[in-house]
Image (cartoon, rainbow, N blue to C red):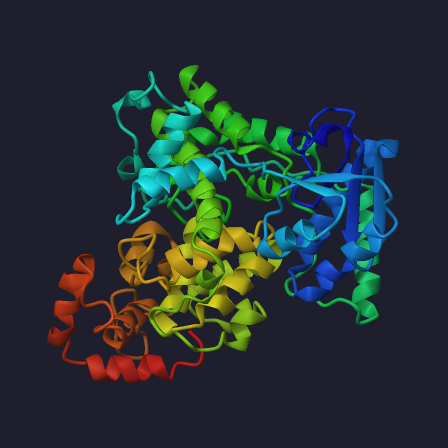
Length: 493
C-alpha cells in the first residue's frame, strides 16, 4: 500500500497534506543541481532551502534528509519502496515516472483534480476555456461560497466589478502590516551556505539578499493566514487591483509562496475566508475576491499548464522576439526613470515579490508592448519571484500576460497605457513622464508603448472585437510614425 511506503516529498510538498498519515516515513532531498540550473533570486533560494531544512528538523528521525548534487545520486542510497505525489513540473514528473520502485500518486495541493478539469474542458469542446467559467465549476465542486448546490453566496458568482477601487488619496491603507517571520539558526546556516557557494562561483543569483519575509514552516504559514484573515482580508476586495509606491503589499495576503511550497492547502485558506464572511467579519466582495484567486485563478493556471501540453510554452502568436534588456534581467531599478517600473522592479530586486497587478500591468504590460520573447519573460518570472514555479508562470505569463497563445485563455491582450496606471496607483504623481503624453520628451513609455504595440500587431489583432475601437483609432493618430520610431529605439524607460 502507498501509505506504508516512505513518502518522497519534493521541496514544494512540505505540508502535512502530502502525507497519508501523521507518522509516515519521509524522504527529503536537497539537490544542489536545482539551484545550479537557473539564476534564481537570492531570497527565493534562501526560502526554498530554509523551508526544506525546517521540515527535516520538524520530522527528525521520521525523515531521511539527504543533501546531494542530484536527485538520482540521493536515490541511489535508498533501498526501500517509495511513493511520491505527482510533481509540479513536467521534467520532474517524467523523472519520477521513469524510476523503478517509486509509486507515483495523483498530485495534491490544489482545490480540484486534473480529472475534474479535463471532464469540464471536454464538455466545452469548441469553446474557450475561460477562467471565469472554470471558477464557477470549481465553486460548485468544492462547495465554497455556495448557498445550496447551484446558487452562489449572495446571488452573484463574481464581484470583481465592486473590487476595482483606486488607492486612497493619502497614499496609505490603514492596515497592520503583513505577517513577518523571525529568522532562526537554520536561516543562519542557509545564508552561510549560499554565501560560500556564491563566493566559490558554484552558484549565481539575481536580486538582493535580505531577512526572510515569507513563511518557511507550517506553523509560520498558519500564523500568517490567521493574521491576514483577521487584519487584512476585509480590505482585500476593494483594493486588490490598486498599487501604492510606498506599500507594495497593500491588502494582499503574501501567502502564495507558502502555498506553493505546500505549507498551506488552498482549500483551508478558502475555508478560512468563507468562515470570516459568514461570521460577519469581512464583506462578501473581499471573501469572494480572495477565493477567486485561490480556487479559480490558481487552480486554473495549474490545470491549463498540463492541459495545453509541452508546446504551449513555445507559443508566440504575436511573433515577439526581442531579448530582455540587461537592466530588466538584472533588476537594475536605479537605472529606470519611469516611477512605476522603477518602483516595481525595486520591489522584485529587494523582496522577490510584488502583487498580481504590478506583475501584470507594470512588468508584463511593458514586456508585451516591447515585444519581448514570451518564453524568456516567463523564465524571468519563474526565477525572480519567491512564489514562481514553471507551472504557475507558463499560462500566467505566456497566455494571460503576453497573449502569446493568441487568446486561448483571455479575450484580449492585457495592454494598457499610462491612464490605467495613473488611475490605479500613485506612481504617476512624482514621475518625469506624463501619463497622458504619447510624444515628446515627457511621453509616458506605457502610453506611447501601447500605440506602438497596436500598430505593430494591427493585422494579428484585427479579429479581436474587444480591440476594434482602439485599432480604428490608429488611423486618427497624426504622430503615429513618430511614436512608433521613438518607442522602437527606446533603450530604457
